[in-house]
Amino acid sequence: MGHPLHAAMVHVPVGLWLGAAILDLAVVAGVTNEAVPRLALYAALIGTGVALLAIPPGVADWSGIKREKPAWKLGLYHMVLNSAALLVWFANLGLRFGADAAITGPVWMTSCAGAVLVIASGYIGSRMVFDQGTSIARESKKKWRAIAEREGATLPEEK
Amino acid sequence: MPTAKDLLQGKPLRCPVHVALVHLPIALFALGTLLDVASWIWARPEWRLVPAAFLSLVLGVAAALLAAIPGFVDYSSIRGDHPGKKKATWHMVLNLVAVGLYALSIGLRFESLNGPRTDLLALIVSLIAFGVIGFSGYLGGSLVYEDGIGVGRHRHEGDLPQDTREIGAGAAQPVCIGRADEIPEGQTARVNVEGTTIVVARQGGQWFALQEFCTHRYGPMSEGRLEAGEIVCPWHNSRFELASGKPCGGPAKLALRRYTIEERDGRLFVHGMPRDSTV
Image (spheres, each protein chain N blue to C red):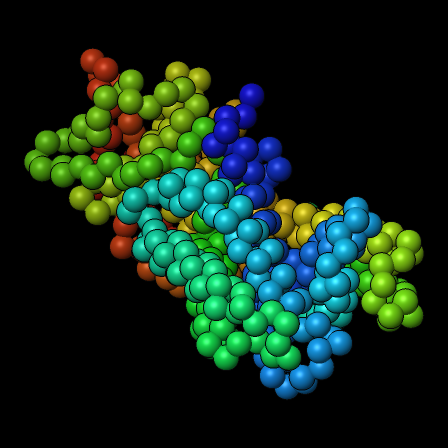
């Protein structure tokens, strides 16, 4: 595929968890449109579902990183924060369904906590990619090797 | 002080702002289209699927327009002859098409927000738009993971090289690759002499010329960072001594090919190009 599955899938929980928190805060700020708490419910629900699906490819990516590399530790923090975020969103969903989709104090507070956790964790994930180069050119190594070879570079032995 | 361009590219954050922002529109569009489909499966007005889908798409369009701003800046920073540039152009065009389609779908459903299910035409347009944004998002991911766009960019001082200087060597040796004052202190240039590509770096008033492609995964050294006597690959932080090309940190194990470069009368000359010498 040329693109790590985990990185593609996480757009859904990151976007929807943040979206749910923003919608909850809109209700707290006085927005009365009844579609807002419903959309927040759907966002929290689908976001949490897809977050669960994104775990296996994420763990597979992490297990491919050598332990002595800085990205390994970042990946560990990323995983711990994601687990915490997931637990918070489970609690949030329970509270939401318990309140029949109404935005009670505990609902919006857990939303905000879950959003902060996923921002922190997502930031660490992006540092792995954009600072440490995790998964970069993993699948396109051959393409770049061919270009480098054509353009006169010294190359290592092909593995 | 970071410039406006640096901020829009996310340099102080050390990751691209566009990539962070796009989580919102992608997720909101996906949810909106999913709710559109759900409204045709379950006609339950008390679930408010139709207005919730509408709201999701409206917020998605707003977030997409916001994400487009740093996206344009990122696009403009990709070298004109970069192998990923064409893909980036498609990514941009298809994103605009998808946002246009979602805006159309929003317009088509505006009259029937109180109905039990999303207007049929609006649903169809919403599904097409989802296909377009899905494919375009895939291209965007491929720009990062396949082409390394944006990776390590925050470590490079100033703008990335905007082009490759194409030099025809002819018979004259050494090869003149341009004027010295075109490359400021601490900066790099990407130069191609009859098919062989090198990075030219200026540091501490000295000149260095090395092969452009890292010996680890062939990352673009001209987009890397210059540190005291060293050049660092933007992709996986392989380090090489500028003077010798020898690896001195990170995953690369093999030296970069080195070329002798000298400044004469304000002009730069490289010896042994295109490829018959390692000096």
